[in-house]
Length: 330
Image (tube, rainbow, N blue to C red):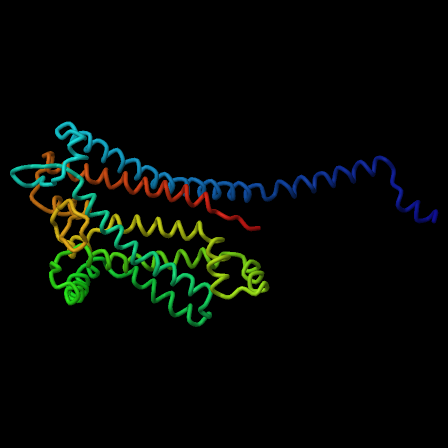
């Protein structure tokens, strides 16, 4: 034991030398990758500012659109009173007897919105429930991509589909139906937004914890009861979000309503008649020989501002509803 103690014990001078060597080695070990850490910091900062730039591009683009709409709309309302714009029942900006009432365009847009929602929301939700609760994995892998293919079809193709296929079928049941009508356009717009509803709703329903479904089955509930009374209420916020997104897409649709619904700005809620929506009016004015700076040209921005406000209100209402029904699971 004494021999071991003698070999392990060192004089104080030797201990201090050993401690200095250890400190030097530790300092060199820490300072060796210093350049590597600096390079990593540079890369992190570069990534940070790149991502920040992408966010700023989106924000600045939105701000630019709003500023443009506000400036041009303000110039329009210097010549046309806001009250006349909101209450007049005629929209004839390109005729000799000019009227600038937005109500016919709002009515036409409302018909398309209501009709497409009646078609898309139930069918899309039912498809999502089937894919998330009833379909097996092989069927889901085939059916879901086929549904999403509808979202990739150009809207101009949908417009001609409504005009040359859907309208003739409707005329067999409604002989007095005109070639250009809101009913045909509403049906096809609804078909177009079905994939949006079904895909997003299916993702929301699939994300519901499996334990909730198994608990329902353990209590003796059927597939239908589990789907409608457990899974759907649990994923309701995501379903509502898909509804709002689809509705916003229907409001902004242009080519289908331009080709199938006609270009008759008429204050009516009859889907069998020819109508004109806000987006179709923007197209009809902007593709003509409308000189820049004229009152006719400024109507494009006034209608666009109205469309922007309506879409913004719908999204704000959707966010409030989504927060109200949001469920958080751990």
